[in-house]
Image (cartoon, rainbow, N blue to C red; front, side, top):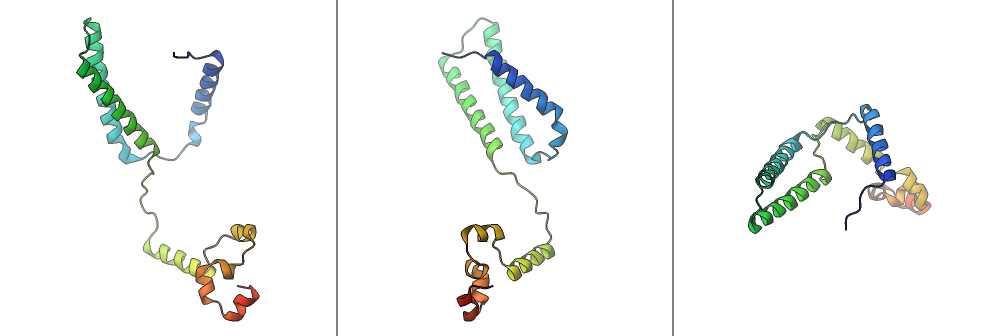
Amino acid sequence: MAKGLDFEESTASILLLIALIRYRSRFDVPGEPTAIRPVLAGATALAAAGAVALGVELHGGELPSRLSDLFTALGLLLGFGALFLWLRPLTHAVAQTVGERRVARAIVDAYGSDSPLVLRATGATRATSSPRRANRSSPTESSQGQP
């Protein structure tokens, strides 16, 4: 049994739509450029299946069982494809140069890779929690618990 839309649900949906349209300029991150081809392929397949089903319906016919199963399978594949496109991680071009990565690595090597907030929350010290710094510290430093 399917449930119809309630007045409250449709009002909330319309308000959300209005808010998204109103504040769309704040969403300035570009979309994934490589996703356009699969989206167009899926839209084309969906339009073709819809055209066939509409043509059969307008002529008063009924789809054969195998063709109906094929459309069901196509709908499932398109649904999983859309879910994959929606949930997959975005591919980003590397924006750093090799020199910038070397500078970042030197900073991490010099100062450690632990976050001060994590250190404070766990009560650990930088000398004992960072493997790089722990390897470089002298026995007197690690016994005193100072970096």
